[in-house]
Image 1 (cartoon, one colour):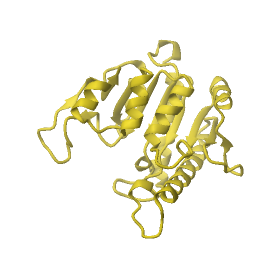
Image 2 (spheres, helix red, strand yellow):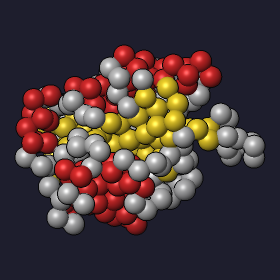
Image 3 (tube, rainbow, N blue to C red):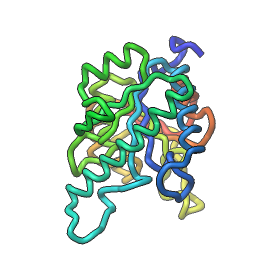
Length: 240
């Protein structure tokens, strides 16, 4: 479908590290990586300009790394490096199927990625390249969710699509509670008041302040992200 028939012309897709491996797995699965690259290619063809923020939880989650003698800030930097690994893998997979990409990193790794510069990222988008953003915000104590919100605002994106393991936002954990209720639409203020956990509070506050719409959906459902970009009702829409 041509981009001019889509609701969102410049989406940012946030992909967790779990998308790179088998369920409950570790590292990078070749099959999962290729499936992810194909999905990104389909999204790019549907929605035009596309930015992607990758997580690193398939290797290291800084906030959850509980090893004596490793400080939290160090653990967070380790997590940022994990996102660079994922971004490199995703870039190669995307380009192997004919998609032009650029990896921009918030920490300096000049041998494998360009440095994050907003205007540079904008030029890549305008040249129809997929911009893969690694290393979060480049600062410890901030999640890749916050990085996704920050970068989406900087790049003037019109939506954040958070691709997760669940098909939306629930009033409680659907894996633990059979009676969990999924929301089709909710405001950021309602989400904060109800304590709904789909992003960290800093990311939510950024999205709410800048009126950035967010969609939460299941990354494993084929075509789900494309439908979201077209404006179809999928997952959960969170808006100001």
